Image (tube, helix red, strand yellow):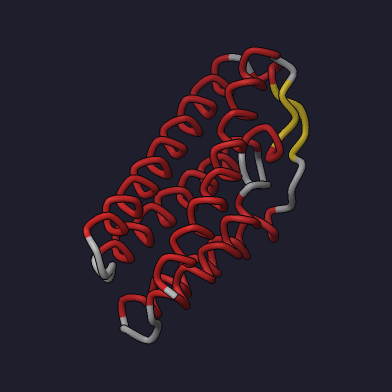
Length: 152
């Protein structure tokens, strides 16, 4: 899989996770929890936009990027897991605590699926941008843990 194709799949994954957060917000027992989930959804969409910027940068300056650091299979497994979770949410097969628990697990996996770990980056300023992105996923894990404690 080319670097561009890998980034496109990662963009799709971020948009999918954003949709999961959005639909989960509709199940929230309080406005505060719903707002937090909607905020997380927006941040995932921001991540997708950053990855788009990375894809565009890669198209203009391919020398700034090295080899892929994760396999196509690993990325596609993440997408499949997110699609499965979304389908079970849409079919009302999960309760909110179960959804948040699965999101915690998925966010832990997705922390790897950002450009600084997705592919080698030789450009230092671009590398810092995507390291920040991964740091936001660590923050998502903390916020999900807090939400899960609130609803139990």
